[in-house]
Image 1 (spheres, rainbow, N blue to C red):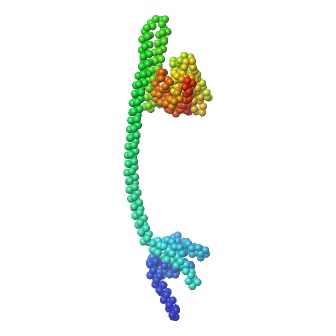
Image 2 (cartoon, rainbow, N blue to C red):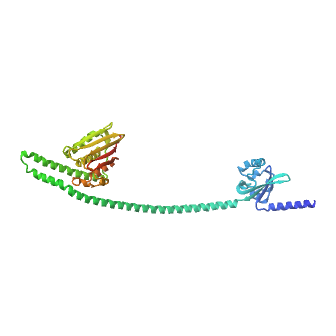
Image 3 (tube, helix red, strand yellow):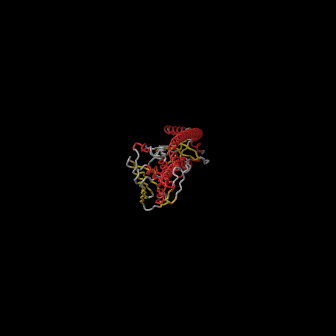
Length: 412
């Protein structure tokens, strides 16, 4: 053996010693995928003796799906020279002799040796790394569970605190509302006592006076005088009845005891009933004119509430209009809506006071000498709201007032 051959052999032995003592596994295969060499570390990783794998296809060390696809990898690379693993490296799984799989990082390089292509694979075992990662995941998962548990406990505490705060706030709001209601009721009682003492005194005095005077006209020819005072008594009683009805209506509205009773009614008949009820308070030569527009006068509504609304509005029109004047009640039914216009030619409402018209006990400055409670329009508005309707008005002092009520026509 020549000196040169001896040196080459020495170099080869040293390279083999280095490869066999390398920590990472090293395997070489030919271009057909057959194993040519395997170092000690690689043999230990796969639990094979070197003789059991050399000369066999590298697929024996691969689990599915790598085993099935490996040959096509080599052929595709030989055809396209496009690296998928070669020179790049990636994590893959290996198959031990006993069928157990394990994770490792694979780096593949291509070597041209003596006009022959071989592939060298460097295998770095990731078993310990994966165990550490799994342990870290378990620790993180445990920590996350603890954090989630503590967070939930904290949320529960916060929610309980918020709930308690809401209950306290609601209690405070209810208390404030109750106090405001109590204050409002006290003011209402005070205003009622003040109004009642005034409004009841006048008709009661009239009744007492007229009852006393009637006794002074015992003769038959004095019948006209008796009738005069009897009518004064009737008017005063009607006035007192109206005041009491206003307070009964207001009480029911305040307590939410107004119940809707829908019935089919003829609007013309209801208007005739209202006209009959207000006939006794008509002034000299006052007339109520009814106008009806629409295809059908048979509607569904609460007749009691609607009659109360129209009675109040027409009574006001009579009260605040002069003698020899007409009060017009115009009713239009169209597209499930009924519109009622009550038009008078009376004293009207001062412009600066119109914004207060529907407030309880409000009475305009130009009606101070006319009896009234200041409750009628407030009651009307609230009855209209019970029927899901709306009321508006237009008024000019010394010209007259028009109240417009719109109500839905309830279908059967």
